Length: 446
Image (tube, rainbow, N blue to C red; front, side, top):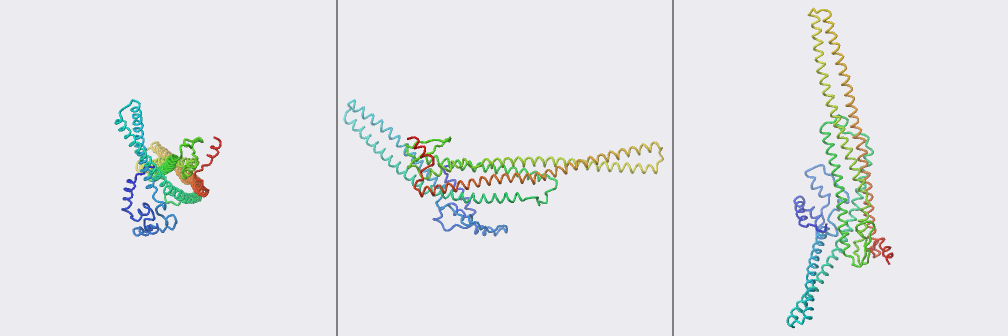
């Protein structure tokens, strides 16, 4: 996460620039370096020239849209990574110099013990002094880089995190209201006004069902990726911030792999990420993924039901064609019998035999018609079952999804509000580095 690829960022922004130069200015650079970014209202107005379907948005979230007030978060993380890499290289180089310095010191002591001539010892002594000076320079350089990193952390990263939390609070507030409205509308649905609803399903209906299932699966996958990405982001920054703690600080665990640090020298931002990481574990994200998974299965069951309905429809159509064919054949046979009865002088037994044959065929035709009526009734029941699944199943399935999303949105909103309140209260008290429970642990260890 800290290895932010600014080159990739810039290349992606160049593609956006082709579509809207003003929009890229709104999302890329610090607001103070630009003129006021265009509002969503102006962007919509400019786009409406080619389409009449655009409407004028008046939501504050869009009207005041722009870059972060505290600067580009991605660029800050990129600079932090660059300085961390530079610090690592300095420390590594300094450590190599220290090892060489220790070997030279050992050689100088051996030369002194063995009574080497003064010229050789002076040469070794000069090398030792030079290495010692280089070590001091490396230490100063590392200290300077560390201060730069801490300055970036406190003056850029921390305000950006606070602004990010506030933005997420507003975002999840909108999400909560939207999901509540969606769920309310869904519960009020009593029937569908779609012109194709209530008619027998065809291949296009089954294709739409498969597409809906695919979208639900994609929705579930994207949601899981969102939660996993946020958790990985928090864990990465939390783990990085713990590196700023003094070595004397002891760690303790509450059934987690990550420990809870405590100390006055800890970075103020650490408390936010510690509680953020703890709160993420309590979010009901599994309820959302479970409801989406269940609804996907229901949609798959609908697809199977539509298949059974189609199969029954094909059976009914085939039997109807067969009934028409048999009816025409019977009518022709009956016509020939009547004609032969008038023109031909057949014996009475022969005429009786033909009459019985026609009667038998008529009975078979009537039985086949009854079978067709039974199959038509079955098809009608299949259609009713399909309609029931669509109305009740969709209502139940979507309602479960929206209710789980309402729960997740509400928990997320509370989490971000609590994090903002906690950081503001701690800042007023001047005790940002305190993490609840750590003081108790420290007192218990004394």
